[in-house]
Amino acid sequence: MNNLDLSIDELHEQLVAGKITASDLVEHSLDAVEAHESDVNAFVTVNDRQALADAAAIDEQGIDPDNPLSGIPIAYKDNIVTKGIRTTAGSRMLENFNPVYDATVVNKLNTAGMINLGKTNMDEFAMGSSTETSYFEPTKNPWDLDRVPGGSSGGSAAAVAAGEVVAALGSDTGGSIRQPAAYNGIFGIKPTYGRVSRWGLIAFGSSFDQIGVMTRRVKDSATILSAISGHDEKDSTSSKREVPDFTQFIGQDIKGMRIAVPDEFFGEGIDEGVKLQVEKGLKQLEQLGAVIDHVQLPYTKYCVPAYYVLASSEASSNLQRFDGIRYGFRAEDVKNLTDVYVKSRSEGFGPEVKRRIMLGTFALSAGYYDAYFNKAAQVRTLIKQDFEKILSDHDLIIGPTSPDTAFKLGENISDPLKLYFKDVLTISANMAGVPAASVPAGFDDQGLPVGMQMIAKRFDEGSIFKAASAFETATKYYEQQPTFKGGAR
Amino acid sequence: MISKDQVAHVASLARLSFSDAELNQFTKQLDQIIDMENQLSEVTTEGVKPTTHITDEINVFREDVVVDDGISRDELLQNVPETKDGLIKVPSIIDKGEVDA
Image (cartoon, rainbow over all chains, first blue to last red; front, top):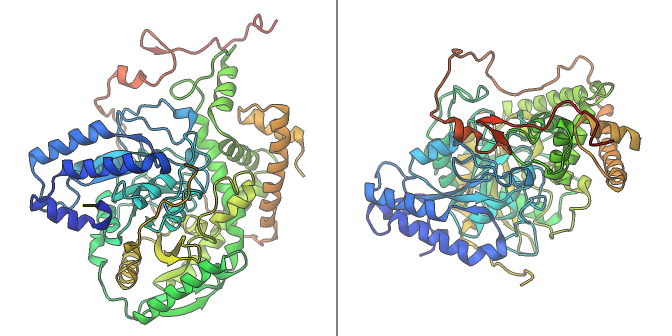
């Protein structure tokens, strides 16, 4: 049996019926890791021994028939802290960091009986769109090993696509769940800002960061998102709103759903192959009864500049804590305290992280604050209003997730600006704090997965699950599996 | 146009150091990125309030009490690069200059 073929519900049914055990599932996952990791490198740390012990404990206890997540393995992006399991954020700075507590999401999924299979690779401190800025070597795309998996949650996406796990958590600051989900042909959702506690997520841009779920099947994400959502007193930005059972939206009719399609999402710089598939997807949704309107989001072109000012500013502030004193990398051969700071940071951080810290420090520095930080924050207001206006009379905004499909390793890494524009279609949802997902929408002429993005009103993840599940049922793109072609070996 | 001196100044604010070659490369790259960010000046933002957070919550309060998470002092110190007698050890804060002399 291959985990790839089954949904969490189907696995749960088999677990309850005693046809398989949690230990079997963990062993299947570890076999897949064994088979693919030398090609894919999706994991920084495989939690094999602990996962087997946890599975044995759950088998001993018996599977809870009312809890669909009991005994199901999951992987966590390596910026989500896990007690006693090293958490690196893809950085040399945290190469040996061993957290003393679990993130709230980990706590919740542990309680639900999910088994932590390991920690997935990522761009350093979640800064990047290709997982190439990781200190622990890049992750490869299971559809084509010469290509990137996207980023920054590239390890989580590749682990799911490669069938190493049925689900993984990621984090999304400017598209870091959705773009890799698109590149790997899986579903990935960034919920509303505030829906999921960020306690235990290593901070990048605190007003943008949000933890979300990546799975092959839409309903699997709905099940897991229901389990990780909700207020947490340890994260004062987490929302007190009631959390619906998101699985109730699965399989609902989408007749009459109002969908806005922004012209700007199909403009210059968007690959023809991507456009074609997303347009095909929109026709499909129309056939299912959705009503499509063409709209404008005129501030779209300012998303990238505003985001790189704001997110970098927040990053430069958040990353001040890495000073070589209390935890993390400390440089050798230092003469005084300033030396500890400067050398530890200069040797512990990679070039992309330094670039963002520099950009942020510049935007916040005396004489530049108004022209950069404050201006960008004002533009953020306008972008947010653009979205609120369109979403006031539409259920969803739909367009491509990424302007392209997975690109070749090394192709863009030396040109930061070119890489920044890969986020052009995903950033706006973080700017506005609204939920957004990438849904598999077929393949381009090179056989590479294309993602269709669905964006909804704040706290209306339900509309996304409704449309994504209807689309999934109609298209069944999840049935196609990666080929692991190419690669240097 | 951002100058190499400005980049070096920002680096010192950020507690980062670069070699001369790195500084040249960073100056070039940051200049390109800041040039891209300068597009923002095209947008009319007079009277627009800046958005610096996006949460619905306002003034979240909690009791100011000690919460025992059951984490011991030893556990808390396990990630500290250098400790002494259960305390965090740092190099001398006052630079007496003799090492540099």
